[in-house]
Length: 115
Length: 113
Image (cartoon, rainbow over all chains, first blue to last red; front, side):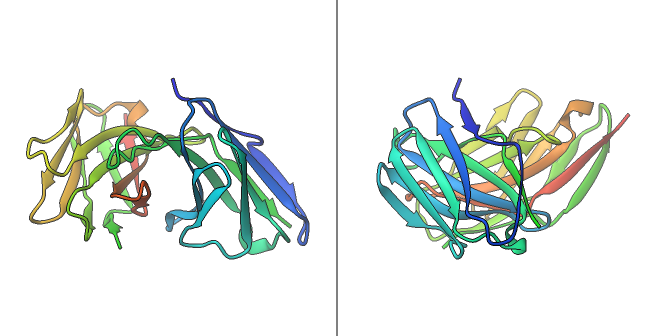
């Protein structure tokens, strides 16, 4: 089974702190994704990586950056956390076996609260 | 660009009954996939069912089936013989040539005993 893990289930940080959210997958997937999930808004893509050291902005990249130094690990960075970044963050991965087979596998999520 | 619309923020069903969740989408892709994901309370998002747009036959996975109407850009999920464990947030999603998925806003399904 594909396993996607995230470093924390719950995280509380203060405004202005630098926050790192880590995601690791064990299936050698090329693609990795970071989403935020808010009630009534569904999942919105923050950043996407299709290879090591490669990244692409999603729909809401402002206030976030990412790092992918190794294939299995994709980090989301909040340079200076703000209260409007309080949310559930989901990581996902997918293989590049077929161009249109875009099924993604999700981690358990990190619920981040910024106070 | 792709858009996915789920018009039912909440639905409820009696245990053992059938319920249908609606989804419409819009895409400029000529070939694409459609998905239904399930997110149980405080648990991980998992894939329920997927449909290749070039296949006319509707996908089925045990009690879960879809009604895919390509011309109408409609992709509804039918859950038969509903069980308490089906209670969850359900997301419809579409994926195209760039590996990315576009999600709807979700439908919260309650199953009443």
